[in-house]
Length: 101
Image (tube, rainbow, N blue to C red; front, side, top):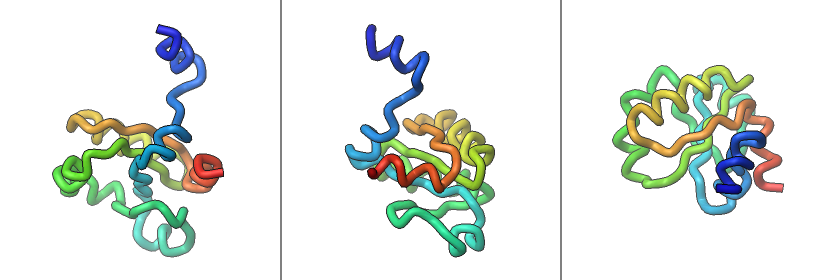
């Protein structure tokens, strides 16, 4: 019960998910990804994501999505959750570094 209340006000503990092997999913375009990304992230552009759902399900991992600002990753999380995946939005890919510090 206490964790539920804590998450209501602070959100999920993305750092704990990352430490427990969550998949970092960058949904920016391939070009954006080439220009900079977190080294532990994989790139599946948002436009390609629906075709990769079964591949992601097979990994059986929590997914932490990121993009440039948090907008596309929010859409990605919505799609992933609709398909039964445990997914969270980290916002900007630059914010991912704090999960591993």
